[in-house]
Image 1 (cartoon, rainbow over the protein chains, first blue to last red):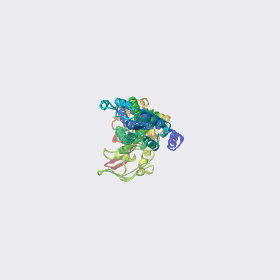
Image 2 (cartoon, rainbow over the protein chains, first blue to last red):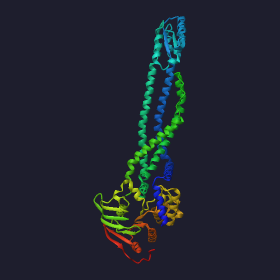
Image 3 (cartoon, rainbow over the protein chains, first blue to last red):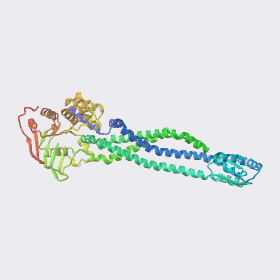
Image 4 (cartoon, rainbow over the protein chains, first blue to last red):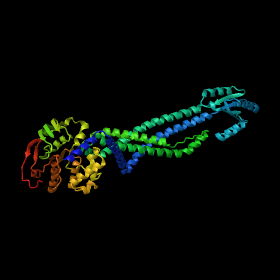
Length: 327
Length: 229
């Protein structure tokens, strides 16, 4: 009888807050997390499919975001190296073009000047446009002298000063016109910011999708464990105790889905890196950051996945667990 | 310990399971609850477990009105009670040990203490050699004993049993009842609902007879106690 009483006291003590209770609490959480994980592993097909769905849903906006970031960094490089084409009037003597170039070479706003003669221009046009045969119809070369002016690096990112330089070049003697082709840069810029926005929009929708998928998965889990939940409630399990393994299941689905998404992103990056590099080189831009996955991004994906997993499980638990009561 | 004060229970749809029940059980007592099926035995136990609430009157447990427990309070109330069901309610996805350990796991007992208590409970019901088995491989009588071990492992103040011998033969039934008697002898209050009236009468203990939701009789019927412990 005495032993019984002392054991009872021990139980009462456990119910109050103490370091021992905290330790027990943490250990219980570990135990639940581990048993949730092993339950998922016990059903590899179902778990694998759910993780795949989550991985795809997380990888898609990530790839879009990377694409936008890539476009952005490519754009800044292209912007840096955009040059001004100075078109001379037809029939200008090569000496005066060279004189123009020499006088501007000393200007500190100019980094370098390349002169393209009409013949060179023709050759370039034939090579790149594939329309060389059209030009052969002309009796004489219709192309003017062109000076390709590369602005000094301190002008990059300062469109106003760039425009001043452009005006000065345009005002030069025997210059027909000076062109700084910013329109397509503007277009590319809008495309990049569109993709950026799109990736957030898609990401938001897919996050909701993940919540719903996981909510449904956890709902099925609750249905499968109905009997267990009833027994646990009968022997005095709190709502929290019943909820815990389900939330952990959501956590693991999301976490593993995030890791799988990182693998997907890395694979797609690997597949795309070569063609992408070629594409960018053709725009005179070599971007160091190619799609792929850094450790930070991997962690971010895992954390976002785990967060969404917990939230989805929580929503499902809130909705369905209360309905299961011992009768 | 338990007090029913003029308790009626009407289920949705108008069926009266209990009608103006008043009874009291003191701590350390053991009693049988008998009556035909549908007499209200299970409802009475469910009221004590706070699985159902009375429509009228009060159910008091250790002086506290169970209607005022609230959702948060119910689990802690149930932890002070051990329950044995006719269908055992064991979980077949885990071992006998883990089944018995469930009430301790729920209250967050540490694993050493849990192992000690689970083994003590299994030893008490004579199933210590079965602890690693899945309950599905056990016989009906053994499953019921696992259920009993689970009901007493956390040393409850009150042990409730709803038709614990429903599916068992006479000999096993007597064995189970004797187990309850043993728990009672160390101070646990025991209330057993059963329709096995001959068995009950062999014990010569308090018998509460329900009939159509009312108490038909309440008292000790002395019979020849040759099988009693």
